[in-house]
Image (tube, rainbow, N blue to C red; front, side, top):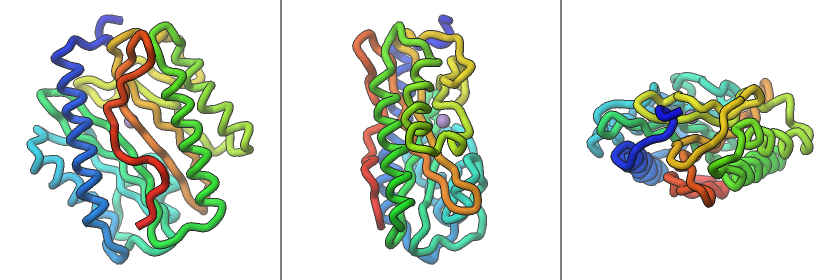
Length: 231
Ligand SMILES: [Mn+2]
């Protein structure tokens, strides 16, 4: 339990790592052009985090586009980022030993109606999940909040992973926020909220913030825009 609850020094390091992620995302929005490959963008994300002074990467950067967004843990490839693609970027740096972790999905050029609808659904679930987070709430219930919204909209079978996880020296720590969770949130636990929908052979969307639990709700360490961005 005490490992899940972080002290002020740990919380500040995590928030700093997350601020670094926000600054990186802001730079990447300026950097991305259609015609670049996933790998080029992933390399720029990693170079930017390290350039900001990250001691290392919390995990290998995920940067996937088009049909590759259907893989929640896909690796960046030489696929060219094209108009009409969704692009999912999941990344984090390490600050004073502690990990950042954020995911944003953006559109390139133009999106179709279903891509927009699924994006809005994931965003609605993600916001509801964050609102459900506070000390004393069970992790199961946070997952259920997100999962019910996605299931009621008919996409439940495509939400193929848990809602989130604790973060610390490791990017994936207790508690887990999923349908089997038995932990209860407590003040000063850092947790991610990252629902996703992955439609086979079509596209996927994931949106992830890293928040600090308090008695009254959360301190969201992730400030980046999450209304749909189309470049
Ligand atoms: Mn995560």
